[in-house]
Each structure stands twice: as structure tokens, then as C-alpha cells.
Amino acid sequence: MIKRPFICLTKPRIQYELMGAKAEKPKEIPVPKTVTLLLDSPMTRKDTLAKPGDSVKTGQKIMISENAGAYVISSATGKITGIAPYYGDYGKSFTAVTIAVSKNEEMDGAFAAVKEAVSMGALSNYLSFSPGSPNFECFSNSENPIKTIVIYGGNTDLLIATNQYIIHARMEDIIQGIDVLKKATGVEKVVIAVPRDLIPGFGHTGAEAKGVDIAYPSAMPKVIMEKVLHMPVPAGKTCEDLGVTFMSAEAVASLGKAFTSGHIPVEKILTLVEKDGTKNLVSARMGTPVGDILKAFKVTLQEKDRLIVGGPLTGSCIYSEDHPVTPDMDSIMVQDAADVSLVSDYPCVNCGECVKICPAKIQVHMLVRLLEAGLYQQAVDEYDLNCCIDCGLCSFVCVSKIPVFQYIKLAKYELDRINAAEATK
Ligand code: SF4
Ligand code: SF4
Image 1 (tube, helix red, strand yellow):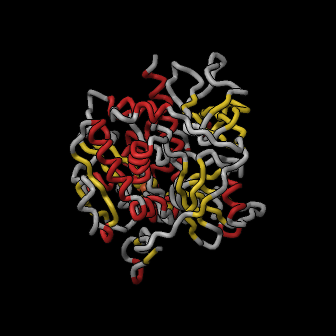
Image 2: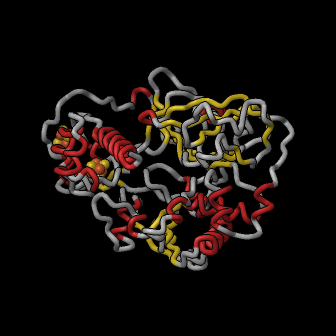
Image 3: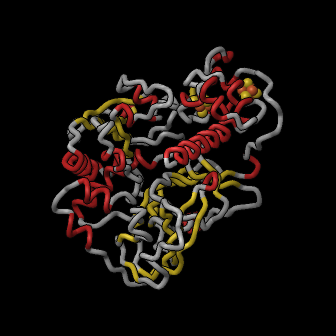
């Protein structure tokens, strides 16, 4: 929702929408015939740990290599039918593990055997692939120990109701998850940040409740760091560098549920936004093809319609209905071809709209010139690329329809890749 002030002398105010007090139950998508799980590691010829023909149970850990350490959790019972390379945004490499689902479901018991002793090992060895995609790597960095865990009870982009639903409907799981996190990590300070109007009722969670403004992009981690925790993150640093890590409400609820039930959760909650803006909450097994969700809501795609994973300002397009539901996929937006705002090759006309709206006060009109020329390091040194908080507002307001945010994401991805390659030399 955009509120433009009278005669437009100040920035437009874009707000997150709050869900009503009554949380509607998500529609359950039937277990599909095949699930595809994306393992966050490229495959090599030496990776032979799991192979086609292997039987798997629901909740079973699947690894292709002991060395890489990366794993997925099978969201169904069946037989592995394929293990193949998979390429995501900007060519990022994954390994796709495809499973033909059997009718009779069997639950794997390995996690139940370790869940009695809450430990970091149990979390990182079994729960990294849980719905909400919890990140445990930061807890093993002894140089920057984590001192605060922030649970955000909303979504960072607009139109997405996933985490608001979780805090409405699964508070018991969240309370249990907070307890698990405290015991496993030893971190005492846990903050639950929720849209300001929802603060009443969060006093009994074992976490300190803090209110977040509903103006976009107040829910971005770096904005919460500055405005709520009063710990501004310097350019080029991360929240983790300052001893703070963020987890979604769904990730924390997944941990709680895993330890109370003894089973690793395999159902992902997500928001389907239809072409007319209708929002639907969905519960689907991870690995379900996006096409199955569209079919359940009778959504059909016409030529040039767009499928976006993530919200309208920061999401990315996907190009196949076979794309699977992943642990971090909080929404799918279907955009009608007529509403697609096409990028152009018009040059920047120096209107200054992007500079006016940028919350990080970046000279975006200058930054974009360097990014278009591929001068990424110069963009960091001269125009504060590292101060960007990835809100996407610059692209949204650009009158020349320059894909500024996509240039920014590509530049950051390339710089990370170059720095990682140099670190391994
Ligand atoms: S995405 Fe654009 S508007 Fe947002 S902080 Fe970065 S440069 Fe500024
Ligand atoms: S909004 Fe677009 S056209 Fe206007 S100054 Fe920024 S980049 Fe240039």
C-alpha cells in the first residue's frame, strides 16, 4: 500500500500490511508425485554418497558427500530418481535431488534418537534444511561470537503473510524454539521483533519484545539494527560482525516443533499472491513443484505472465512451474503480463527519485553508472555500494525503468565470488 503525501514534497510512504487477529488456516497442498530438494552445494564426480535407486524415508538426511557437509532432508518417502546440477540466480550452483514419492509414508528415526540432548550438533546436523531456513554457521565463529538472536515475526518484503501467520498460529512452537536456541547456543539475549501494533501478547515468550515500524523497509535486518537495537552496521560489515543474528519466526517454530515431536518439519508455509492481488496461505511439502500450488488454486499462466519468488520489491523471477518449494521460499507472486513493468534501455535522466527514496542515502544515480559499466569495486569505494540494504526501492521509482536493484544484486554476488576465490588462494 503506497501513501503519497499531498503535492509529493516528501518521500512516498509504503507500508507493510498487517494480518487481522484471526489467522486463516493455510490450504494444504497434497503430497506431490515427485519432490525435488535443492542442496546448497555443487555436485562433483566424486560425490557418490546418495545415488539414484536409494530408498529414503520422510525426515531422512541426504548427503552426496561427507566432505562438503551440506545436506537436504527428505520431505517424503520414496526412491531417489535423479541427482543433477541445478543453477539458480546468477548461475549459483546447487545439486537437485529428485525423489519419486511412495504411497506409504515412513518416518526416519535418526533425529528422534538425538533430540533428548539439545545441542548445537543436533541443530546443525539435522535442522539446517528446516522450513524458514535457520542459519547455524554464525554460531561457530569464535572471532565474532553471537550475543543476540533477533527473531522477526513478519516478512522483510511487502504482501507476504507467512511469518505473521506463524506468530499468530504457532506461538507454542516459537516459545519452545526460543528455549531450544538458548540451550543449544548459550546466547541469553533473544529479541522478538514484531510489527509495533502486534506487540501486546508477546511478554511470555522468553524473549524481549520490540516493536518495528510498519513503513517499508523497517523490517530489513540492517534497519532493525539501527532503529530498534541502536547498533548501526558500518558499511561493509554484517549484523553477525556485530554479534547479532536474525532468524525468521518460522525457523524458530520449526526448531520448537522438531524437539517436541521428534520429527524434522517438512511442511513449508508460504503466501501465494494471485494476479488480482488475492493472498492465500499455503502449506506444502518442501520440494513440491510450484505448478502444483498454482493448480490447487486454479491459477493458469498465460504467455509473458511472470512468476516471482519473494516479494514485489526484492523478489526474483523463476522460469519454470517445476521449480520446487525451498526452505526459504516465503511467497510466490503471479504477475499478469499486462502488469509487468518492463525494463528499458533508456539512460538515467538524473531525475533524482532514486536518491530521494534511498534509505541508505546513496547517490544511486551515480552508483548505477558504475554498475552498468561493471566497475563494481569502484562502486564500493566511491558510491557506497556496501551501505545498500537491498530494499529495491530505487528500481521501484526509477522513471527510466533501469533495473538498478538487479545491477546491485549482480555486483554484490560478483564481488562475493571474487573475494571468496581470493581467500582460497
Ligand atoms: S536497494 Fe536501492 S534504494 Fe535500497 S538501499 Fe540499495 S541503493 Fe538504496
Ligand atoms: S530514478 Fe532512474 S532515471 Fe532517475 S536518477 Fe535514479 S537512476 Fe536516474
